[in-house]
Length: 593
Ligand SMILES: Cc1cc2nc3c(=O)[nH]c(=O)nc-3n(C[C@H](O)[C@H](O)[C@H](O)COP(=O)(O)OP(=O)(O)OC[C@H]3O[C@@H](n4cnc5c(N)ncnc54)[C@H](O)[C@@H]3O)c2cc1C
Image (cartoon, rainbow, N blue to C red; front, side):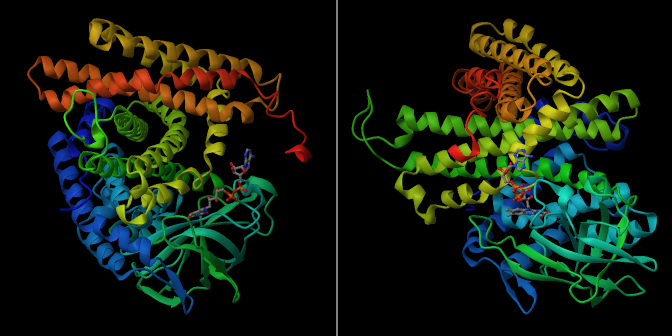
């Protein structure tokens, strides 16, 4: 039996009740998608993730990747799995049907992304990047480029990459120096890109690099960056891959985790220039690339959920099996799952995972409602909500994934620290999720600077009002959810006070945003997670009253209570740190660190 069983029932519950699936299914583009479709997609994905992908995870970690003769070699099992992944149609489940995709809502496909990441995150990054590239090209490329590339990307025959980072340009892309020189109907791209995920491989027959570079007359800074599509192999007249283009992997990084995902240094144009075509308007490439980056950010959040869940599953099995010590009222020695401290760890893992799952799926649902809504005004409101949620989904969910996977190691004791159990790998693999696609610090600054302050707190206030609407049904639920109601209400008060403090304090203290952003991000993420678990508990109580399954539904209620009592109190600490401002943070001179 596979050691990863996707929690299909929990996912379905989350999609239906916490990501507002009925509202998504009511959108004209999704009229053919009902809960039965959702269920069968999840069941099939779960089989693929558990039976095909998960068994290659450990092998990939051990074998890693290498560069031989200017080409990256990946484990053979990955190539075999990639073929099966494409044959089963998984690359295109959420893509535009015009190019062969199945057009499913993101609310559903994100659950599949969670499963791919849980099963084998190093592999999952490859199709994930292709999806981001498809979306960016679908939105911004000319019809001719779309016709040339999209069908092949959607089928998985070709794979996409994302080439932003350079040695001197990481978080700060304004300093990137790669160039693109016009040459007839195309451009010659030159420069070095670093840390390019799946930057070279031969699982797909061609690679489609989306590259940021500067035109000769481009203004400095972010307003002078353009986006180019650069194929690994130039295309023959019939569109098939031909001669190699001038782009090669120089090396792959040796890193803490995701060993089987090639993280490449790529040289563009060392032998004259890599042929590329501009995507979107010249000098507006960063905006086009943001389509891909925002897509990837939500995907990275889902990676955190998947790895937390897999670590949780392994930890439960171990805790049931491992016998150590005694417990009050029990005869003889007990399995460690009996000990309150082990239960504390398991419940923290489980509730943080479910809260982050609900945050990610809800973000996907906001995106579906923004992109497919018929009413322009409502769609714009959902877009604002999605813009607010994206940095939270990326940063909060990956921060708590560090905690959950670390707890997975701890539950295993010494066995967690040795590699054979696999939980150490999840901890290593998830570490990068706080770094790539914009570090969590940068996400938090984006959240406060752009999403909170830019409209004077209006988007956050509207969301707080929606969350406060849970108060009345929580009150009606009586004693069972009284602690949840009280903790959520307190946490929402902390959020409102901290938001007001930041909106009022920005002008007074220019360092405030950067100093307070991380705690604010953790605060709002923790509150939204508590709101989602409370909603889940309300649905569960209702369904139990109607005779529903007590084990599954009762668990939703316990999760909400545990989170309210053990996680929501963290909001007070985050709020206090926000309101402490920047004074002590900035008090030391750099030489005194
Ligand atoms: C395994 C892996 C895969 C990757 N895949 C890709 C890929 O496919 N394509 C791609 O283009 N890139 C990729 N990256 C690059 C990744 O996106 C960058 O590493 C990331 O954006 C951070 O940039 P940096 O490493 O230069 O760190 P820096 O920008 O040097 O940041 C270092 C620290 O300073 C902080 N910091 C920086 N600027 C500020 C600021 N203004 N305010 C506050 N704090 C700040 C950061 O938060 C961070 O903690 C990958 C990286 C890794 C490790």
